[in-house]
Length: 334
Ligand code: UDP
Image (cartoon, rainbow, N blue to C red; front, side):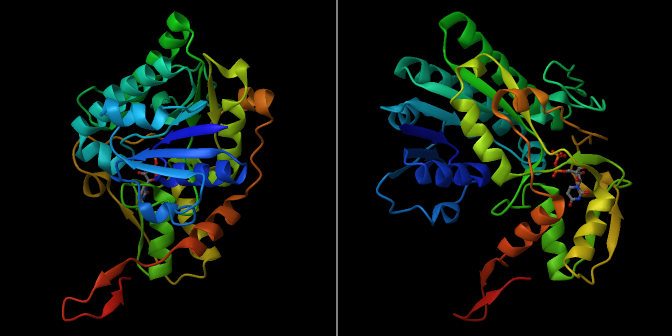
């Protein structure tokens, strides 16, 4: 099978590439290396079935090139991460709306099937016990840039659904809930790699707000096989599927668990939101998935525990290399 992946140098994308190559696929990746990194692909660069194109999904020629000859396409390329979205709302809107339209058009013309990666962000501030795919979306002001990501991804889903209804494009949608694991960077938000890095460096763990907001974290190693199975299931076309963790935890408890598990000496500090983020940020108090639809379709039943997730993220952590300004020596940043 020939597979194309947009955003294949990103955190989830690179795990997907490895999974598909191991399954015998020929895999072509398009990535503009904005938040993705070649470092993520170092285990597959040089593999005879792996091809890489550097380029943006805003460029139709680049998209056509990677999609050419593919049986299926995974569209993961997006502007992601709360920090990035809040600080660069225009880039987020353009990439996430126009870029997806370019991919949809290209895939439609090519005859391949498509898997669109969407997000639990689209549910916004809906804090219900268990968010089903039909749940209402409760978004804050359109002038708050936090919500531009949710709005753009909602439009992406609506586009995909319309292409399915009007043109019969075989497209399935997955909504990912706080996926974490090795290679995820905390640079653009993402609380688990941030807190793990802080704990390992002996720095204070920065818990924002009162720390009682909750999330359900899921492990990339559970999510990637589920994404692939959904892409292979014709019943999924025209539908959206939640993929999230089943264990709800507050960010404060998460921080305490990270400190304890890693034997860190770090303290935990509560940081007011106004200090943590620039203008345009608003948090969700809670976000809990109902996974029953993906369980019914492909048996999605994530098994990796939060402790295992934290240990795996910590094991992967490498301090960034920086050049010593005084000379040629390479030193390690804490
Ligand atoms: N968060 C935190 N400290 C950090 C980074 C994030 O307390 O250093 C909080 C953030 O405000 C949010 C939660 O952790 O309440 C999850 O944030 P993330 O950006 O990982 O994901 P999302 O908000 O998209 O669920």
